[in-house]
Length: 463
Ligand SMILES: [Zn+2]
Image 1: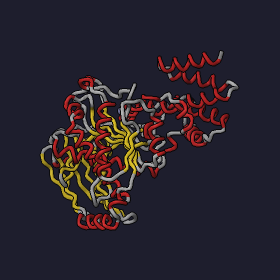
Image 2: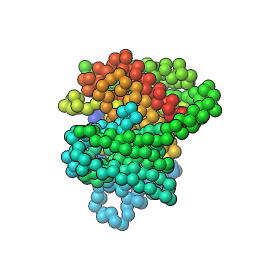
Image 3: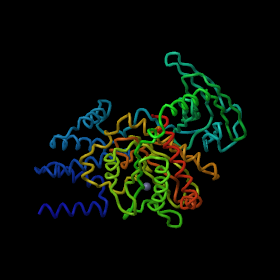
């Protein structure tokens, strides 16, 4: 009688979406039975709950699910040491028996009080332009330089009395090590340009804009890049395998937006365009799906691993609720991390929903701890190059292309990839103007071209 009962449970889970407490009770039941498959089911349940606890920032659930993972994992002889370490770190004596919400140490939520808001930041030609919603006064911008002799690092810092709407943002420019914009304190937005060599930095203010000129040793870097390219035959340069993943498909339409445009169709079209451009440039390209069919998230990176791909690009389109549809637009690139920022969580939750109950996958993979830091850094670089490629290509022919930035988040479609992997949100299919662009052939072509340029830039910099 056990079997029909289990089937019923699984059915109930997929039909009515059991609450966390129901799943927890179910998992505890599985754990306390003497049946090994039930222990395995418990393990899967606890893992799903653990994911949810991270996405929801639910400390109570997190502790309970971690305890469950450790108990069931031990019964199954699965290495759960990372989970038990995490549990230990959460159970430090400081924590009172009533679980306080877990607050990550590094990323403090900053309450913003400044009235000026950063609307956009990016390179226009060779200048870095920060655009605000209101006119800036000269008093609002404080510029200074720092030099760290130990690290041999020059830092050019702009403190601006303003706030940013999104999380921190990283930009890239040839010849400059790092450019980052982040909220420094409630009143101050900080732009840091960091380099190992001295560079020339100047700036000017024009009404709502702060324009920063960065004069890196372009001649030098260009010469280096050229030399590098010369020394590598172009054939070898493009001897790379790329797996393109068109998001969703089949029974899973993804986001349905303006005029009922469907994400699964749009991203397929873009993916196909990208494939033919990359192939024409000499790369080996494979697609996780080449038609409108359902593919499990877990199968997608598995396929990329099988193909021994050098990079994995998952293409998606974003969406917001109807009431905000007219306002939210823009292009974003995501790479996999354990990030718990609310924005990342929201997007991740949307993209993750397709087959979160895919038991085998979650049983075999211990997802979040499979993220290697090496891969994360490479994925971050790839994301920056893809983002830059798309924007560079689109801004030539289209106005109001919004740079949503490079972000990190817990995307399951990227989990398990043994190569740098990025999830691209090509735009908001819910935004009337952007949706129309997304379905147009000309726009798709520019977008795909930009992605291909980003791929080339990435390979050029990492070879
Ligand atoms: Zn999607």
